[in-house]
Image (spheres, rainbow, N blue to C red):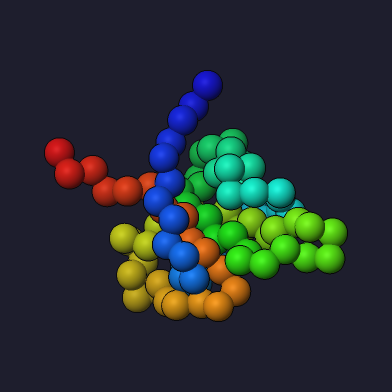
Length: 87
């Protein structure tokens, strides 16, 4: 089983083309969806659920550290990236 700790950046959005999207119940479910796709390195997750209680999860092929110019504040999303190692 794979485990990666994603850092949450609340009310932030990485505006790049996604490699997939799906409706999920939680940030954990979105994180597992990202782990299932080799080209996924981070994800945007809707801050508010839809009428059915689902959250839009956008799986992204890069992260906020490699696309800082496309990273912005957002009232609608939270962004999750793998923290940069300090080794």
